[in-house]
Length: 308
Image (cartoon, rainbow, N blue to C red):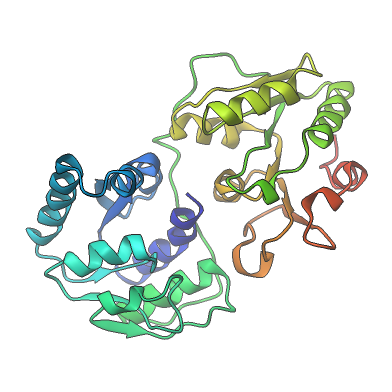
């Protein structure tokens, strides 16, 4: 999800240079809501990479993959650009009849993705992911990129959830795909208790059943904390957009807080904020001194909370 959000400023910048430009976006169906938020996106072509990987040789997976490739190849695109530059996206790029632009061997996220590209662009891996995306698209289209980072989204696709939200609440994003990015349950519970004393409601989203169980355990220490089962991303975006602030693990929803301009604290353990840290208004990064996320104290998080 974070990769998709990193690409949004590149689309905004391209639209500023070419008013009539439109993009079709190939995206995993799990995150297909994200491209619809940008007004420059015309069509979404969905893949199912996660299931394809599990059932690579099954007839259904092969048929679905061929269908995606046919949809791409049957359209007369001016340019095809691999913005992700990893092995999953490179497989799609390799099967395209179009010439594909991507990063070179020293720039791609996963080697040897570059072998799928007809034109290769060199972009330093020391740059933030958003900057790398903007450089790639600006080189492909022939204009100079700037330092501005405007996500350029519309909230028209956001959807109000069916349950009632508190009048004032924070979003606590406790889940993360890596265990090393997860602040301990004990620390989250201490934060819940602190916000409870301040009368702040709390929403804890989840990405799967295991994360929901963890969110339930964290929220169990507060009457104002609510754990959510998996709900559509458009509803999560609505919730994040309306939140007073968020406290996040280093995961996709942290980047969503930046996209919708919600003040946020994001906790970082083993990852490098210079490369993938949230970028936007009122984004605070708390970085572990030793790459262990649980070296970040509850006191440090509380000290950085927005004025309440």
